[in-house]
Image 1: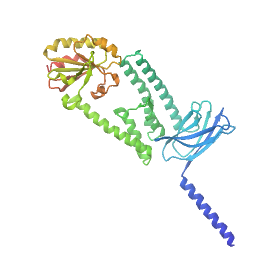
Image 2: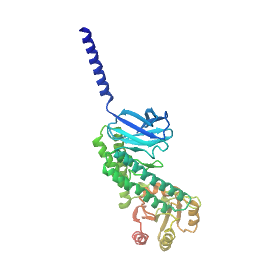
Image 3: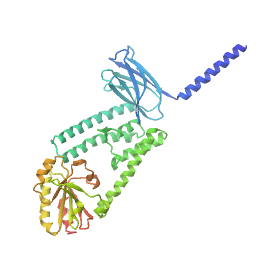
Image 4: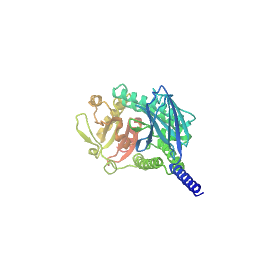
Length: 389
């Protein structure tokens, strides 16, 4: 009788230990995989694509029939993983406690990957397809720009068009379910380490806000939520500061020496000329690109105005953003006003600093060095100048 009681006590203790172990381990998700054309005995790895980088979670040997299995702790929020087979990677998402049934051909792991009854992974595949098409267009545009097949203005316009193709598609995914893994995934796609969705752009910021707010609501304790929320709020603060500065530039006359950093750029002879050196003159700051269709007529119109008003104290400080410096030098030799060059081309911070959305764009500074007008249509330049000359 005592022996039976002892056995019963041991069984109860083992049961408690087992239950405790299951509870402490948390929920799990399983992967059942089947790879055609796979070599029996090859190793496939399961890795976590976390904020801190790639973390290997488990490995499995592929059976003779190409099958493999993984069982791992389930995430508390949508999370991203990948299978690694040799040098091949196949990313996927897990957005709930589930069993993923994966099939693929081992010779083209990601290209043939299919996950049964997983809408979120179907969306990830569609996002990748759209992203790959966009990235290919952008790299081709960069190549054409570098080889001078297309000019700077054409490059910027076509680049913007290519990015908008991806954004239009991704916006539907994001707004369809901003709390999903697909929304997060679509938001953080990059081309050459630059985010396609720019958190500092007001229109793009709305996508970050939508995902951050939803994740904050549904996954408040998630590390991804904290990272996304902080990232979004920092971008919001920076964007608001930038908007305030732009409002000042557009609406309020300000003194160059007190509110704006001076512009100091080289002319055709390499002499650096400061904008601040033109005090006591009415100055037109002209942002332009010489290697463009609009440039010849634009400079003819400027020359007409300059010839008419230079004796009344007008000076033009024209900044070229041409990527081809040799072209700019040749074109600027006959320019009668101050012509300088920014080697940063269309990537120059001056364009964002002065909120230049289109080229050409001009600003008029009065004799005290205050911006008094912004002119994007050169036909209005003369009437604006007559207000201060």
